[in-house]
Image (tube, rainbow, N blue to C red; front, side, top):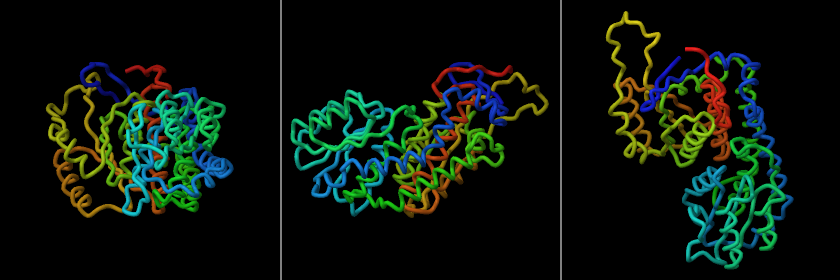
Length: 381
């Protein structure tokens, strides 16, 4: 199956046969990213234990922050988006903000709280914010590898630090770093995160890993199936709630990193207004001469809507979906829809991200892209 990337003239081949056997996948996945993604549930459970042992609960017990700032390094910035989305509910005890620069807001001080998470532990922006918070007497908590510069900054500030085992690439380290932040969000009443929801999410990640394992046949492996559906398209990922919008963002960022495939993401209802116009140029392909030779004919990438639905959606979003899906059907724009599994917010988020992470790696490997971004060879056209 081939296509021509718009603007480049480069013909890329999606080699479906790479996904057929565990042996070929093992040869292509040189860094073992599929195996590392399968540790998501174990990461979650381990980090729950590490967070409990770190003394964070006692540190937070008497805090009633006016605002909570969450800063994560580039490798796992989706973790900050997840906390902000989970705090997007009426009973949140404090607003959650995601500072974008190396400078704290002028108003931030001892009445607020800074949560920091870093995959490498030496990110300049994360370290700068930790130092600024310490100077202002602002409470902070760090999550990351040990030893690291971030750990040292937290120790100097007499702030707790959750040491998460390193050695995993950022694409497969999310749950180890996100879990302590989720746990703290629950303890601070920023979001309705419960321990039983976390445990259920870990079990679900194990189940997803089993369903998406390399040695399962493509037709019964949901990650392989979706990878083949979106691998030669330009995916547009839309979440129907702030929570599933985080999963859409994760899909776009993981496709870029694992498959060098661009994608557009957004959250309804705003996404339809901002990006819906892109579908106006989409139409069913002109078949023309049905008997022409298509073997050497390159096909342009076409848009595909990847719809990430939640179990709880606003009525206006559901109405918007009915209109949108009808319009896309008229334009012959394909749609892939996933619905989060029933459960608490962490379980629902894990049900989508856990699957989509596998999808992005399978897309990359089928396109001849090592998850590190290196071209590993193309089959003959």
